[in-house]
Image (cartoon, rainbow over all chains, first blue to last red; front, side, top):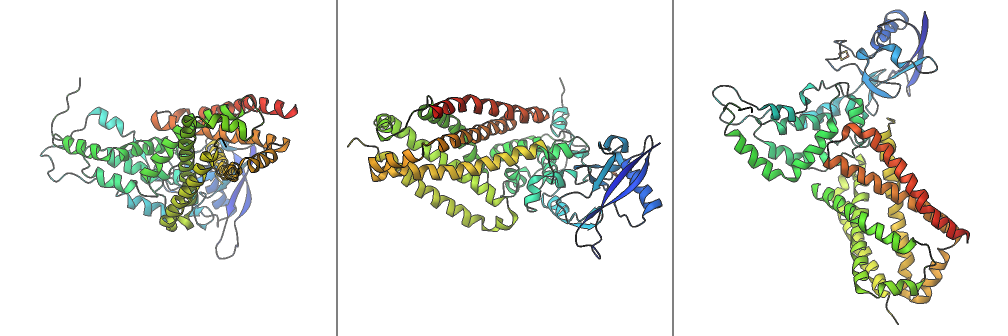
Length: 255
Length: 108
Length: 114
Ligand code: FES
């Protein structure tokens, strides 16, 4: 039976001036996740440890935290994989975001940027009688971007976000990418114009932290590069989309 | 924004050529640089043209770079317009000054 | 602080970039002495060709080479779909620029010793 030291960053806005680390001893057992360890601490050692969690199987996105300097979903992280050489695991809240308490951060800017890119589909005026049709290639081009669970791991890992909260951020740019490339969307031109703003796609400095942080193995950087290319040929892309929307209800022939 | 990005990118590609040339000509093999041996090269109008183009490209790249660094910062982002104009002014002044220097290499 | 290879690369890109801008204006001021005639130019250049500045030139070469290869890496990322190779590309840039700095710095160093 081995013990690990869990160091949790604590911050109570009513009492503390700045965050500090608290240490807890936890028994290391097979199959225990970091979230389980946090629960154990809260239930058996210190009831005031505060953190967000809900689904505990990596789909709600509420438990994103910074473990040993890397952003991840703690419910999906086996404790034994993150014990460092000194037998410790260090858990901090998502970096660069205002801390509300302990491991809970204020995600206002995250959601504001998400709203800004109009994350919903803007369908054409005449909706086809039956269903919309998309070819396998068109679906593939979306690069599974709809798998994003909005956990904020990429957003808070982004160096550009750290410098400016006005930057749209990898999460919202990935969503914008999903909508721009969707053949059913009828306003790619306006979307691309907005993304061309000073805090849009060209603010990305290709640091790749978002890819490294994403628990769903998505690729915001590639999405941003694609959006940049589309901004550069916006008019042609708009025309092609208008053309494509003529045949949204036609069956796709696959060779 | 796209325009600044493209300016930076194309000037970068041009710089890869210009700067390689510049360093090979002026530093390999290393020698003691003085007025005469610079003049010897710059007497050729083609070299003068190359150097002026190089100056232009390098200023574009430097100033777009500084512009990006400054506007990355939250607090300075609202002076974006002002920063743009300052950059253009600095660039124009430096270009005129540098061109003068290049043209100053004239056989007496 | 979110420290990754990407951050190191970005930080160095910024650092070398800003250093090169400072150098550019310094450089323009130094050769700007040509406006005041041959003598002024030779005097100022003599000062900037001392051993100390030769050594600084090697540092300058390192900055230029790193910045250039980092830029080439960004171009590759933009035009090809290579985000999966990002780690090896970072290291490739570090290694290539280190090698080129040594190769390019050596003649300057030897010349300085003469
Ligand atoms: S608790 Fe839902 S993603 Fe971790």
